[in-house]
Image (cartoon, rainbow, N blue to C red; front, side, top):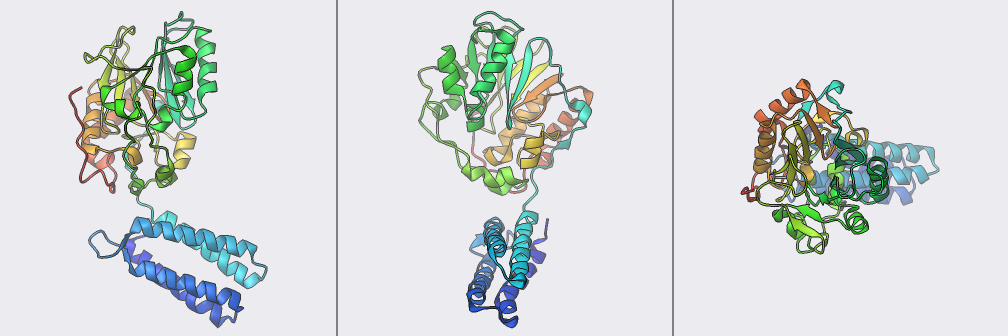
Length: 388
């Protein structure tokens, strides 16, 4: 990460180069004037920037980075369209420099705990399967060839996942329909195919009562926190859908006693923080945990990590988490279960003593390893009910 003081000096040098260099090199007016205006713009928003959190200024460093990226992209595009070799080299070079400065000034995301490859688990037991749907997981609970209404789907993936989920279900269960669709929570990447699958299978949808407003059309989720850093997924989070889904006709509250109707041996556990009604699913006899977004096994803030599923244990995706104190309690609650195998909402399934050691480390030091340095929800957290 570029230190703020160095960033300020680079901004001053950038403004000077845009204002003075084209004129000194006697470039045509069609280039000199726009670049001079760009230089004045860089100078203006740099003078208005709070390079330190305790400094004065109209915009913060995150907003400044966005402006750097925008002008970098514009200069790069102009350079690629320029025919004269000198201006083309300057514009493309300056554009690449501005984009690099924006990228390198991005805050680090949550530290988490590195996971070695041998923590990744493929065999999850006879009654549990993970299916990756793009950047998110869904899970199937039930034995192969379970009869009609003899199995459960956990979450419904990102938009467009319906065909893949149906194909996986048919491969494992034939034409049998699920008893219910269980939701860890209602964020867009967990309910993408929910309506179509519930309708096709004529299946009820079970979720925590605190998640109901986001599933009955009543309320949108709070705004994301792109300032958490860590990568492009965080940066892009303001573009992600937050509007409520309306599946009232099939929506049921999970029973208050932690039981799951028709699924003996499994219980739901209230694990809020990432969302008010987030839950995880636990099978004590086998030590199997479906953690949802309470725990991730990849750095979900990073586009490359999310795409490549790079093993890394951390808390919930930071850009959509609205209560970090509750998230820490949820992680500690799940770690205390001593799960033998875990399917997260994002990343590989994991198992074994190396995973447990990493989970203990995350739970014990969540304030340092799980919480981002910057989040609008960290200092003034939203209180979430923790009454189960």
